[in-house]
Length: 179
Image (cartoon, rainbow, N blue to C red; front, side, top):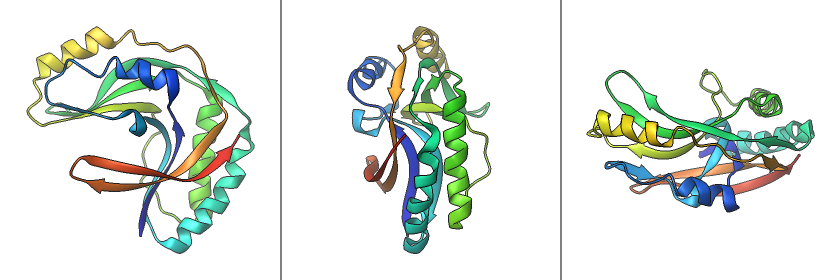
C-alpha cells in the first residue's frame, strides 16, 4: 500500500514569501518549503495495482491547460474546541476547481475510493499542538490575514507519495503531469 495525493507544487519566491509568515505562534509545527503544496485530491492508502491505474488515469486530467492562482488570506481548520491546521487560502479559480474535479474522477476510474469532502484549496502552513492558545492563534490569523500573492502560473501538477514519521510527512514526487 502506498499513501498518495495529487497536488500543485509551491516553490521559489512564493514558498519563500509564505515562509515569512511561518513564525510567531508557539505550538505550531511549521511545514518546510519542500512540504508546501495545494492538494488537488487526497487518495489515501492505495494498493500498487490501483496506484499504477491512477497514475495512468491522471494523464487525462492534464488537458486543462495552464492557468494562474493567487493566495489570499489565512485561517485555521478545526472545530469549536480546537484548531489543528493553519493554512493560506487560494483565491477562487475555476480552472483549479476543474483540475481538482478531474483528479477526483481519475480516482473513480482507477477504482480508488476517496473520502467525501468539499474541496477547499489551500496551502497548509502548520499543524497545531492541542495546547495552542486560542488567543494567540486569533492574533496570528489577524496579523497575517492580509496575505495576498501575485498571480502564479501553474503549468504542471504531480502525483505524490507520503510517508508519515515522527517529524510529519515526507513527500516524494512520483509523476509529473504537464498542463
